[in-house]
Length: 192
Picture 1 (cartoon, rainbow, N blue to C red):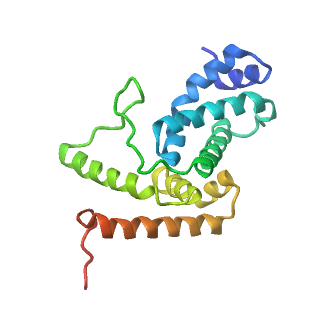
Picture 2: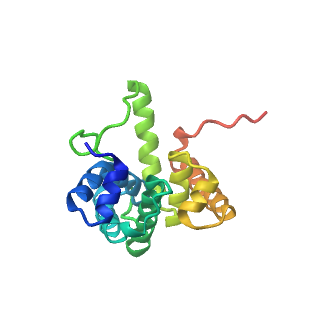
Picture 3: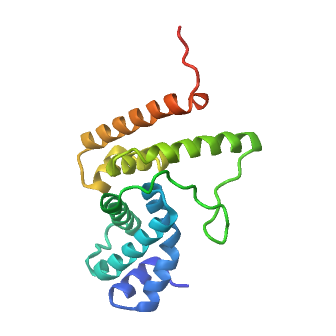
């Protein structure tokens, strides 16, 4: 099996088999990242397809002294945001399928936690459709992927202060929506 750096170099020289191997290695990650932003599995697959077309065309400009995954992540996030700007969200976000043949499932929580998690996910999926594309991307990158403000700013090509502003607005919109539409999911505030 060839290592990733070798596949990247070969694909940049036009080796179709190397590129196909690279796509197979990165496909799931690209689809998941796109999905977290666009919120629809078919749209995420469309974004991923566009990302790999872009990758094929621009692989020669990739700087091998930088991490490939970071570069690919940035291309994916920007493509997903562009997709949302062009097409808008398709209403409520759909949950990713748990079918292992389609996409691998996450860790399996206890039954009680699974019910709470599912309710919270449904609420988030519905409310996230109200966020502007960059707000959604910043929220996902920070709160779901755990990236720092500096990483998000570099990925999206915006200032860290803009990242913090988008995150603040996204939290406000989601928090208000949860309190208004899903009060049972919001813990009671302690008045003391």
